[in-house]
Amino acid sequence: MATESQKAEIKVLDDNLKIFSGSSNAALADAVCEYLGIEVGHARIERFPDGERFIRVEDDVRGRDCFVMQSTCKPVDEHLVGLLIYLDCLRRASARRITAVIPYFGYARQDRKDEGRVPITAKLVANLIVTAGADRVLAVDLHAPQLQGFFDIPVDHLTGELVLSRYFRDKQIANLAVVSPDVGNMKTAAMYAAHLGGELAIVHKKRVSGSEVEASEIIGDVQGRNVLMCDDIIATAGTICSAAKLVERLGAEKIYVGATHGVFAAEALERLADAPIDEIVVTDTIPLSDEAKKVKNIKVLSAADMLGEAIRRIHKDESVSSLFNGSD
Ligand code: R5P
Image (cartoon, rainbow, N blue to C red; front, side):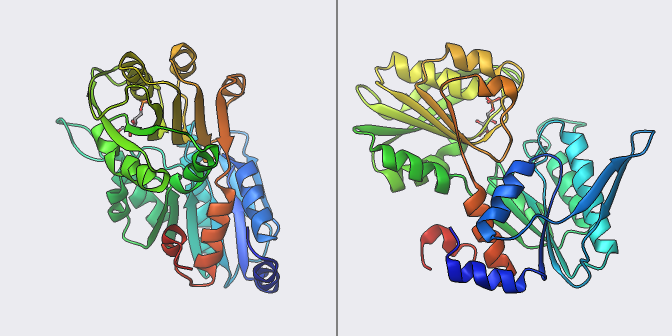
């Protein structure tokens, strides 16, 4: 939480710091502004009769430090275009600096050509965001940290691990094994293990199709242990559910899942209901759908304070990376 003196300081600068919210995650933008003790920026968002979007920023932003928050979650194209139009709008209104705050960056997973005649959407979207007017990006768990290099502007990259680890540390899970549900997520799992203690294990996953995965082997021991599986995204839940079944077969006791982005696409909720998972914890980078809200063992933690603190530091030209190493 921002201290009272930090809030007072921001209030003085209030007129210089503006935070606007796209339509994807207004609740998160409200919570971020509450952390900072300021109001969400005012804008009029309407539709022309043909469906085209119209945005008019109602606050004076000339010479101001502006942030636009938008998660490019489902409907992805709709939210992406919303962000681009917002950026264009602020640039043309002479904002001094514009930061695109993207708690969830959609299209991130198509980040290379792994077969012929396919796009690299992560790069395309990064280009669009820069072209539309962003001077900086603030993002959370970009799927692969090297996506930062897709933007030729400064990127501050936060991780949901900061929020999730705190929750699991408070749970004081005994006899813990931190399990990465695939090799790609190993570094993140190591980070959790470093903060929470416990053994580290890695599942070898084979992707059968876009929504089907097979987890058949594990490096590490989960027999008789309570398991925390961590991932950046739960999309179809194929990865997490097949890993959960594997660790259960291998004798794990309680199974917890911590993931930054709860995408929960199509079949995910059914899969999760059938999986041997005690608790699934995600953050609010993506708002939970009404169907997902009905699932009793899904818990949502807020990333608002982390984002709010990062915004405060960017605004004040303070280090953002030190948020993670506790050096100030
Ligand atoms: C994979 O590289 C990611 O870290 C996630 O494990 C994956 O994207 C999750 O997708 P799904 O829930 O569809 O298996």
